[in-house]
Image 1 (cartoon, rainbow, N blue to C red):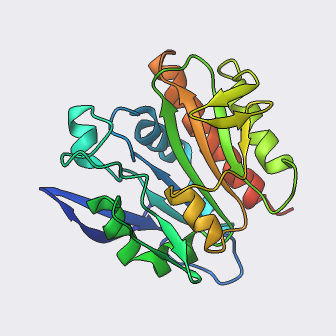
Image 2 (cartoon, rainbow, N blue to C red):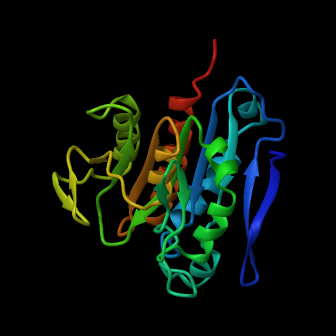
Amino acid sequence: MGMVEKKLGEVSKYSISLYQSPAAKSGLPSLLISAGFHGEESAGPWGLLHFLSEASPELFERVNLSLLPLVNPTGFSRGHRFNKFGENPNRGFVFENGKPKANETTSVEGKLLLEHAQLLIAASRDGILTCHEDVLSREAYVYSFEPSQVPGRFSLDLRDTLGGYFPIAMDGEIDGCPVKDGLIFNHFDTSFEACLVRSGARVGACTETPALQNFDQRVLANSAAMTHFLALCAPLCD
């Protein structure tokens, strides 16, 4: 694909890198896809590889694409949720006084990302997708962010994409968050994606594939979510 690697830093012996379109164009949407925040949620990074294997270089004619394929390599290498220091790489992204900052819970990976906050804000200007899994679930759902009071096409289409592979979560609560129609809508916490939406990303989503289901299906579902994210945020021009 010829994407350009920008090394953000290292954790232990592992590099954390951002990959970007070979030649960004000012008139195109800027979209960021990230995965691998939690090391036992493996279908996200593998789904990204599948997505790239199916993509063509023409993709860069319609989008400035940035990828964070593996944020937590020390956790991923051991199949552990947290990093080797016991920190949660998807918490501690605080937005205060108009800019992102760290707090006492920010992981080493989070601090690396925050050191490059302006780069990531620009990369996610028109949308951020981060791919997670729920290791306790057999049902899929989506955390989504839109500048509206109710979920719109962006949220509904991403949910329906996962629904093509798995049952959708019933209404109720997951991790203390209200779920309705398979969506947790505009729930702002200290996650990476919530911080980028606060920082100006037009829309955002965190997909949750059910880790109790078949692995190959989860990989395909993550890949499909990435494809649909691009279709929604950077539609093909006639």
